[in-house]
Each structure stands twice: as C-alpha cells, then as structure tokens.
Image (cartoon, rainbow over all chains, first blue to last red; front, side, top):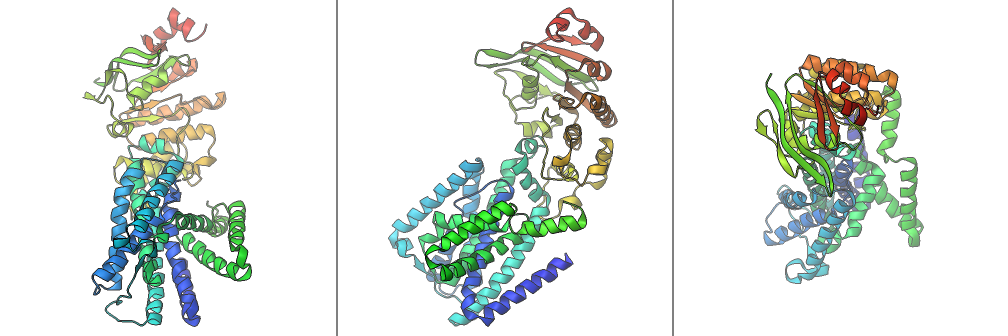
Length: 314
Length: 246
C-alpha cells in the first residue's frame, strides 16, 4: 500500500504541475481523467468478461442532468451538480441494468449499444427540451460557493478531477479485491460454478453494472462542466467505442490502468493530429494493434508482469 | 437413518427419447451410492433433474422432506445439495485458495464489496479443506495450472466448502489416469467421511464401485434396472450384460 500511495502522490503532483505550468494542457488533462473514469467503468465489466458498446449513454445522462439542473436552478453548486448528475446515471444504470444483465457477450454489448442510440436519437429530436443536436449550454456554476473566472474554474476542475480519480482508483481497486469483486471476475471464467455455489451471477453483474454506470456518470458530469456544453455526441456509439478502446489500452488488471490508457490516448490523439494531421486515426489503430499483440493485459500488464517476477507469485 | 433425497415418478423426454422413465428413488443419510450405466442411460440427466438444471415433465424431487422440483440450481445448492462435475467447473483465473474462499463466502450468502476476500473468508476452514484434498502446496497457483486429477479434487473441495448434506459427483475419476484414480477417490471419500457428507457418484470403474460404494444403482434406458448392495447388483445378469458389457 505504501509504495502505491507514494506513486499516486508523485503522479498527481506531476500532472498538477504540468496542468498549471502549461495552462493550455488543463483541458486535455481534465478530458483524460474523464475518459479514464468512463474507461474504468468499462473495465469493471471487462473483468466479468462483458463489454458494452453503449456506456457513453451514462456519461450523456449525467452531462445533460448537470446542464438541465444548472440552467433551471442557477444557484446550485458545481460539486452538488456533479453528485446529482452521477446519481441520475446510477438510477438509470439500476433500471437498465436490471434488464441487460440477463444477456451476455455480444448480446449484452449490442443491447447497450441499441439503448444508447435510442437515447442519442431522443436527445437529437426533442429540440424544445434538449436543444436538439446543438445541445445545451452548461453555465459555469460556483465551486464550493466560490465564483471563479474561466481559467480559475478550469484549474479547480483539474484539481477536482485528479482528486476524484485517485479516490475512484482506490475505491474500485478495493472492490476488485473484495468478495463481490472477485466473484464478479468469476462470471468471466465460470458462471455455471457460481450458480452451483448458490450465487446469483445476475445480481453480481448488476452490481458491477451499476458501478460502471456511476463511473461513466461521474465522467460525464465533469466533462460537461469542463466543456461548458453538452451535445448528443456525448452519448454517440463512437464515444462508447473510445471508452472501450481506452479500457483495452490500459487493461483491467488494476484500476489505475484505465487512467494510464486515457492519458496515453489523449496525448497520442493530440500529437498524432499535429504530426500526421490527416491520418491520426491510423496512429491510434496501430497503437491498439501493438498493445493487443504484445500486451494483451493492457499497459497495466507491464507492471503486473514485473511484480510476478519479483514476488514469485502470479 | 432418515431419507435425504426422494424422487417420485420422475419423467423427462427429449422429443421421442425418454431419458427418465418414472424414476422412484430414495437415498438415506450416510449412504455412498454408486450410479452405473452405459453412456446415454440417463445417469447425468437424473443428476441434472435432482440439482435443478433440468425440469422434469412429471414427478417430483424431495430433498430433506421439502419439495424442490423445479427450483433453480442456486436455490437447491443453498438447501445443502452440492454437486461436482464430470468436467471440473473451476474459476481458472483465480488461485486455488481463492476458489475455496469464494465458495466459503457463497455458503455464508454474503459477498461484501469493501473488505478483501482473503480477510473476510474463514481462513482456518479454507486451510482445513485444502489439507483434506491435499492441495495445500498449490494453494497460491492459478487453478488453471492444476492437472486433471487435482482439478477434480478442487471441484469437490469447492463443494465441501459449502458444508453440504449431500454431494452428487458426476464421474469423479473420469479423465484421471488409472494409476491416479484410486488416489483421487481415496482423498475424496476420506474427506466425505470426515465431513459426514452423504454422496452419490457416477462411476464406470467396477473396482472403484466395489471398493467405495455402500450401494449401487444401475441405469438402463432412463430407468433404474437394479438397486441394492454392490455385490448383488454387480452380479445381476441383466446388469452384467447391459451395463458391464460382459
């Protein structure tokens, strides 16, 4: 625990220094943390051997909740908006989860995709409530009662995103090691056995699903606040695909993987777009192929492999 | 001894093929019943009905005087009827110890989110069961590393963690080399003896049946053709011809 705590503190300090040293990097960094949280949500499902191509809908639900409540009740604090947005995603995850956890693998993935596209279409069509494809503006709220200028607000959001990410990594990692988390991973290897131990795999997967919706929700509310705008694109399947991409890039062996993947993804995208502007997707695609081929457990696989050599334990 | 498992008129057909034909059966506490029969005679089907994987077309299953017909495997397991499999059903990504820890937590019907599995589970009980099936030396290895014989043992051990009253084992020695078979059975039967678990096991090896069973039931074409003491059933003319292929 100690070395990881020191590592986390150093990483957080470096990222904060980068964000405040190069102010134009604040937003990309915040976005990377948002992507990391959402990818961690996907990672939770990956541990159960399931994949969702529709989880951007939870980021979208949360983002729109923040935008809607923010304009309807202008006095609400930013932190409260984040909590309420995440809560909306949790409720949605509970309801949708109760239905989709009956399915597995490709059916699970496609059902989530289908539901997210329903939401995407609704958001695009009900112009009067959702602003249609233009989306909704997110007014800059106060943070802890402080009325901040745009640059100050971005700085505060970056601090918040880093703190939230650290808390999330710690909590999710505890969950992964808990009885419920270990049993969730058993869904991937042997659901029959779980059933014959008297355990409901559906209930376990539902718990994991709600957690993944919560993580995507948290990501979505931070995303909405940092962008100042939410659009239906937030819930489009391409966005869900990006979450899956990052989750695989980072690996689901440890909760930190999603964030390592997200930082790499965000900066790869930024530099690839600058260097080979017409073909940045090519760089991303090639990266994923390399990762899948050489590091099937994602970037975190690098660390766990070294550790097993040291401790002699897998 | 009281009756633990009872079936009445158990019937199931897959299309035109009758796989269970009005099976009336009773098992008392403490018995070691060997189930023998050719492939396709309906042995595994019978187990699948008793453990809730298949629903019978007609008839009922009683466990510990309660009707369990049509309950899901999950609910039947919770009542104390555990099962091991012909192909061991393990959590291959987990370590041997974690497999047992998960089974132990499942028995207590609680899977906390927060506290780590290794701290919450009953460490001493896990140690005891590991000892019982001689897997202590490999407890920190992934279950995927085990050879078939030890996989069978781990499969049985996971069921033992549930502290069942009845354990149904589908071919506990299939896929295990002839030399290892007796070793595996010795360990399994010793563990069942110590835990006072009643057992049904499907078995093809006559030597093993003779040595470990207190009773034998021979299946032919979806029905029990002979049922009784091993020496009597194994000497039955019909059983010798149809089941043992002599």
